[in-house]
Length: 65
Image 1 (tube, rainbow, N blue to C red):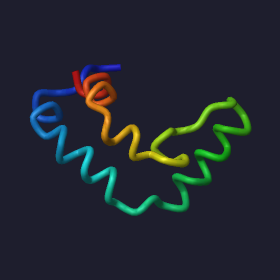
Image 2: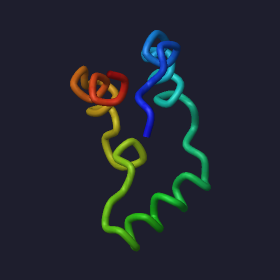
Image 3: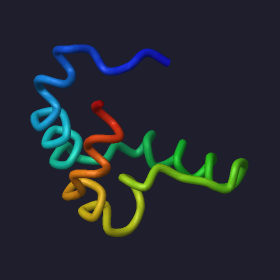
């Protein structure tokens, strides 16, 4: 997996805002359910209380740096 590009790092706040405010699509929820059933894990941004991730500076640093 490649690290984030310079453009992704420069636009990190816009990328997070887009993910936070764009409506979750039915296909995303279906895939998330399948991952939970098959692998025992899920995307925390599609689970209850995703704001704790979106508002976390530590999470942003982990994703973009």
